Image 1 (cartoon, rainbow, N blue to C red):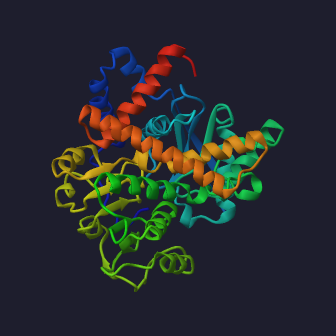
Image 2: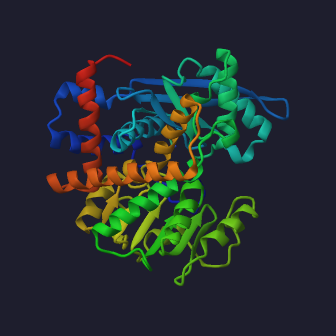
Length: 425
Ligand code: GLU
């Protein structure tokens, strides 16, 4: 997402932001210097320049990235982002977050991430296809069902995954659906994958509310971002009896103290070229104002660095559940802690997506597909178990849920690294 309405702070480098949390957690668990040095550095970072013939016949060159942060626990896993804001340090941070995320929920993957600096909204379907296929060609030695497995992220979805699957399969000479997740169902996608991240946000919100002794019935929430994660989180939170008082996208934020009908908002967006522009079921406010509403639960589900040292002090929510990756800058952590706001961190709260990606990969390799009910039941169990594990660590060390999640993850990846030895991919 980009636009005047979304707060952007380039002041905090996302990789530095990740590292600050890592440093705090590393100290708590007494990580030795060698392990520290191995775990903080990405194992691989590939930069490619992708020439694409545009519809007007001219060739444009796009910069693309794929970072494998760590592949100790298994093949690296993580989405591919199409956005004009993509840069190497962002992809490095997002890849590291995938390592910690997979470790927190206990799935056998390492962390990776990819990105292409482009504006997908201004490109035709043909241009996007040629871009995605050429990127796959250039990454053929990086990707692989036992090596590195991409998935959707901001600006990409099932169609891009289908192109990657097709191009990769052609290059290796046989159909390889398990090379990528988040595929369309007919092509080997998993039931429940599209809803998975939002569902995980809902499950972790419920767990967190119960720790604070707040009933979901009538609890208020504001959700920033109305893409896949934001809109489905909002819909599922409403299905639990919560009152969604504000939603937003690049066009601005919409507030209604009596609650917004999320299904109606989704239908409006879908019939309005994907934006909430002109939505009248709520009073128009800014994205910045949405973040500062007095609600029980704030769900930032847009982009990085939305809650930062400039606005953290004005956050009035009782709890923040991070649907996006990195929506809170490291400098805001301390302010939120001081204010006693419980933060369910990204690497836990939004892990439902990669969990069902793992289920998709398992189903592809089995050649046997699960019912939606089975996917949900298993994903919910993974999310609840992970939440309790992180909560227990936060109690044990008397630390925030964020640092606790890093502690749980780093302990696991460090242990595996010790068992395997330091240099294996
Ligand atoms: N892009 C999603 C994330 O940040 C999903 C990654 C995946 O499914 O591999 O968690």
